[in-house]
Image (cartoon, rainbow over all chains, first blue to last red; front, side, top):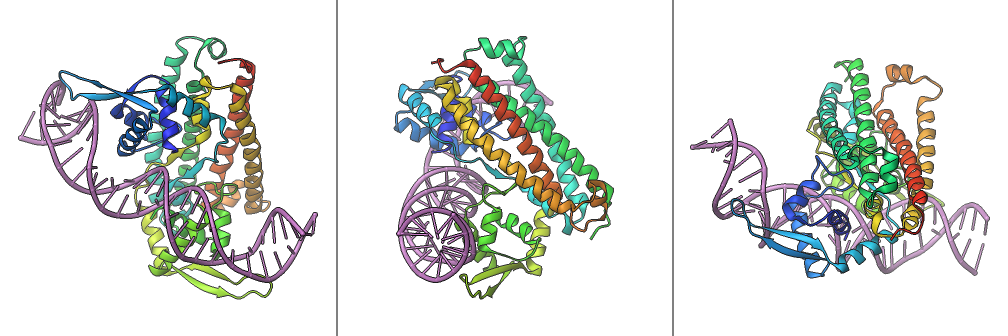
Length: 187
Length: 187
DNA sequence: ATTGGCATGTAACCAGTTACATGATTCC
DNA sequence: GGAATCATGTAACTGGTTACATGCCAAT
């Protein structure tokens, strides 16, 4: 019932297919929740059974047909109830940080290599987030946007995603420098 | 097999009981992995069965006896193998961000209240991390520490934890200001 | 021709969470 | 007297991951 709320919140932006949701919850886009496609399809079924979302079949000529989901009034209520509840502390789990923690017993350049890869991914994510932000702002200043927009939630969370990736980039780069300075002979 | 690596990396710091590990993996301390006590006890058993850790019974007079675990050579090898592997992208899952995403359909001060609580928690975490950092540095400058210390992994990950919490604090405070400025009448 | 994107699904498995149980000791 | 800390564990359940299956269309 944890993914469920994230889906409800995402569907506030409008109806969406399972496939589309899978893209917004994937590692390259999601800035506050990640989930695999199978998880989404399964959860959407349950949510439909519970009356939180409604599916509508969209027949497409040159692509496979798709089921498009939208919130029901019950779904909005459920989301409202969740938002009022206390949030449990966020879960942190990062393999890369575990590897860095263990860097002293391996060749540092191995771990440094992983950091280089993640640095590239973080840069892509940052770019994507900044594009999204520009699209949301649509030329307006942040202040005027925050006063006039009907929906600010997505902008608030996006800003957290942007600073998170910026900090990632800086930390990755710093850690790479530190490890490379130590040199490969360190066992 | 994901928690397993985090345990191995933690045991590099020296032997530890299940109870002690539970504290270092709990929400108020862990800066790169969180896990509940039950998860740890179960995983430690499996790791013992697989020969990655060895337990030694420590009999205590005025406290319950405890089993203290330490890495075996096979455990060190397993950790080394993991550190050489590619890391899978980190999982992000945060209820609070989902609530902020959905802020537009609830009373903003409800969500703002949750943010206030998490702001306090983030401040505590930051303090704890900074104390830990000072203990690690032990008076030395960062540069000299990084050149002389035999283990730098824990310091590298700790620095990520510190900047993460600092960014959290700033974002929480900003989001609270934005939501409070909108006022409670916004439905 | 074959890769990649669109689109959905079943099934099995593994990992994480919650509830409960025990029992002594120390601190307020 | 009651709560918090130390210390470990069983059992049931929920949620997340991986493997596999299908099939068409567009582009290289």
